[in-house]
Amino acid sequence: MKTTNEQLPAGTMPAPVGPGPARRTLVSFFHRRGILALLLACTSLPLPAAGGNAADPNYLVFSSGAGYALARSKASLFALEYRFRENYRGLHPYLLGAWAPKDGATYLGAGLLYNFELSPRWRLTVSSGPGYYERNHSPMDLGNTIEFYSNLEISTIIRHGHRLGLSVGHISNGGLGKHNPGSETLRVVYAVPFR
Image (cartoon, rainbow, N blue to C red; front, side):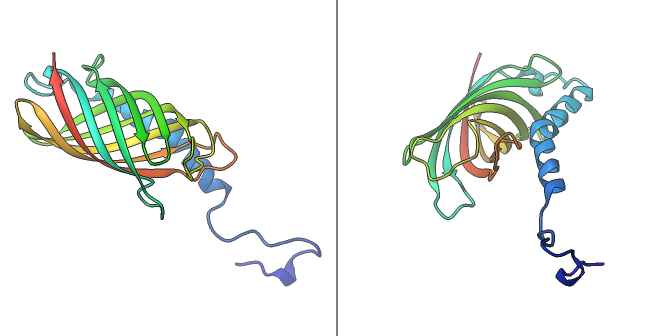
């Protein structure tokens, strides 16, 4: 049953309609712990068979696309990522650097990723990790310099182990800042393997 202004004591305002503290707390929990918990849950999966991602090399990943993908003012984005061979049950550590040349915004981060083999050619990659965000001249104030980047990528082998894919990501401070607008990225990725 909704409460009206007439039923409230004098001088009090009704609670705002829409997402409240409970939703913000849930979002904060998800970004700080949810994706990492998902990645850690992957450790309960059986080890991949030979020829699957157990035999993966290191990858140098080049990507380009749009930052602030759902905002009115978008920015071109370039990123370079180094993906290490997995060190525990299919989990790969990675290092990521991203730069938006239009406004100078930069992001440097690290985290863990896990590959789900959909077929001999297709792969779904889930990743998440913390990083440092420098706004510079960007109109996008993400609320903190510590930001968590979560990413979902689908890719296919094109030749000699090289992979081409599409990546959708979300960056958020996980409630560490006074405000947490978050932002999305959309990138085309090209992964070059090497031993």
